[in-house]
Image (cartoon, rainbow, N blue to C red; front, side, top):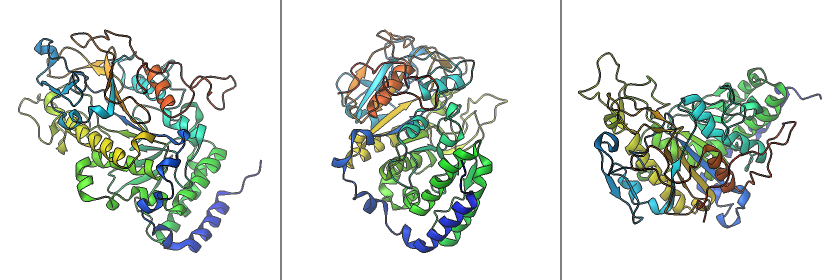
Length: 463
């Protein structure tokens, strides 16, 4: 098959861009979205925001507190009542306590491995990797491959900053089906087309736009398959830059300052806000790595982790300054702003309100989970270690039953006391929420028909 050269594609698009000029960025996002009333959206247009709590959150300190367990298990914090009678969550999440009537919590979730890499690949794809190598794609990459773009100029799948840490998101599908990643600080983002990064400019002027289009000629050499490069990243990247939809979605300055403050004026809260804007602008699936980077692990400021082996109670609230009992020999990485727990409380509660007020919660599936839970017993360093035998998952929107608590763990939170629900079942439920029949839908480009999920929809999860 003879394909037009990338230079010709770029040249054509440059001409189109010159004709369109800067006026293509004049329409703001709310005006653009008025053309698609909520009432006209189909079941197949349901989108997903996946908040991946990389590193493994503690179920004890989030949505499954154990007040009757010994102190070395229940921890330092008390449970709090919520607006769903009989449902308790950690007292450090007061905002979510007033919104539990909008969500469902699966308390009898159970994984299979305590490794970050295998555990993450398992929960992000619904398949336990064989021999430590991820073969099946993450949810967003598969949804993108199955359904394509919903809106011209808006990719189907985004990662903020990447489409789930510790994973190979496209799996066997290859680089042409990777996510479009928005790296760095959302207030000054950098959009990444696979291995090619585009400047963090919001594409305000023709000179910037044309310079970036010239850079697109590098795409054919920067991904694994030239055919995929042309088909997936060439025309799509150019369409993205020339449509203006991406520029508008990434422009957080269009949002009311008070709403931005409710999400949290930091990298993590603003990523969740950007996820809402991307979904509103036509993305199908957005994965947010929602974890504050700091404390005793990691020197970066944008990737984040919930991996609290040390000083869990101090680290989850704030890493702005090292606590007095920080162990010697460890470097403390400070980050000004709330820690994982208050940041999740702020941004998730605001996201649910925001989607609901905009009429988008019924058409947006929200999933919140990490790769495993944490150990029942607090260790000698004041933290909890990796623990796949028990954890919890929160879901909302897209037909999820509001105010539901599904399953339970035993008195110490060590094992499910009701039927365990696995990553395979969560995968089947995600596809069901997106209107995809996981039994009758098969992975593309495989010689043998293989259903996209091997579990079952979780009982009682959907209304």
